[in-house]
Length: 49
Length: 503
Image (cartoon, rainbow over all chains, first blue to last red):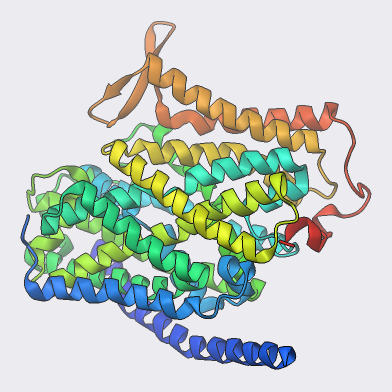
């Protein structure tokens, strides 16, 4: 396997597996952010009352 | 290639587009003010930043432009053109971002206005507005829909711009960033899979080496050295990139932006290399097409029905993730950076939010007109990118990295001189030069001693940046000393809330 082939396979791996891992990380994170936003909105709402 | 998509492929594309609009509508319910809309109230964490940075900064110009160069020249597309960007991104992550985060800025012109006053803010806002207009990406969608489903170019342009605008108007940066994550995965995975299938048909990289001239595997290609220097210099635009700045300000912490940019570099490098390989694969396969469409042609040839729909959705994603973010920035430039400080400093938050949405619509309208007008001028983007870098790079970096506050005259002189020099250079080369079909740009051949020296249109920055630096030095030397707190460490002093934020 020459260096061009090796780098191409590494790039394909980074693009496919790497992007899916980052997306999984995002999904884990987004639920936390959503919870924060809902808590803030609830706090705002109760302060109006 | 018309009619290459089956009903299943078209269904996939429609599901993708419908999903974007649903995300926009859901996110819109949580937008309560300008900060929510424009900088996501500083809530963006590392994974969200990675997705939105990678997908926003890489549009069809990279996809089609990178493969265009590699189709004609080979691996030089990756070695000479893209690698300097990674260095610039590292500088942005580790040096520029931490300094910028000391201030409550919301945009690039905000920073210029804080350091140098309203004149420099206006110059930066105008340069940023034109830079941000995403007409190349809108044009790319028009071409794509024309090529793969036979929709006439003007209607494709209108469709692409309208859909991107719809969810951007609804949900602002949060909607753009969340849709960017879907677009990020689509564009990365489909391109990776397409490359595996393409190389499988052509005998792998060894097959490309056997089919292509040796020069295709030379890191410097056949470009003149001066052009390689210009390629490297264009990477400086990263340091004044409005989308980078918006995300730096939107980040939850400095650490999250450093993590995001560091991981982003690996993804960008992989993406660039795969685009380079696909362009070379098109050349090796003997595909005769306009160089810009080499990647599209070779990939659609390689993919089976079903995956083609996903790939087209991936290419649409590449364009739309760029369009949504830059429409938002261009709208913000008009509403937040120009109108509010110069005409209506007491503008309420609700009115600023409404005005930014309207101005994003105006930016979409201008972009559609430019996309329909400049159907073939790729160099228009290089021109606009040069204007922004020439106007902002020197004064902003000087302000961020100097211990003492620079004089306002220095910033304004540097900004105006850089901008005017870049414009004048382009006008002179366009008028006195001629179009070179081999390099696909305008070149002015200047007699020097007994030979002709070729001056490319793309050399503008090589002249504009030194002149901008010289004007800064003159302004600093001759300008009035109007610096606030000139004895303090200026770069560590946060600005007041009233200076940077909406009322």
